[in-house]
Picture 1 (tube, rainbow, N blue to C red):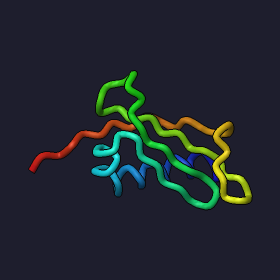
Picture 2 (picture 1 turned 90 degrees about the vertical axis):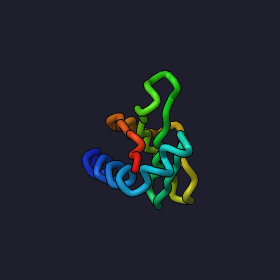
Picture 3 (picture 1 turned 180 degrees about the vertical axis):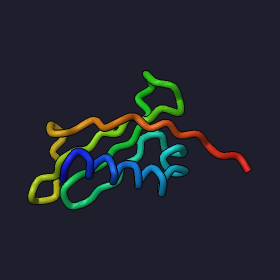
Picture 4 (picture 1 turned 180 degrees about the horizontal axis):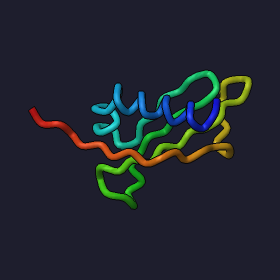
Amino acid sequence: MTLHDLQRVANLLVKVYKRQILEQGDWWWGMDSHDFNIHNTGDTPQNCFTVNVYECNEDGTTEYSKYITLQDVYLIEETA
């Protein structure tokens, strides 16, 4: 996957799972080739989340030494 593809997937995940990401603060989602970790590092404002994408090995395990940091995302909880 290209960097652009990974960013598109991350943007879609944020859109679909925004509520869960906000509730958990450290959220993971996996696919065959990559794992996405969207999390607040504690060093940034509460609504700023870092997006790390980790490569997966052929056996499906995550290769934690190989990752890319995508653009930060800012999430605000919507009130009714």
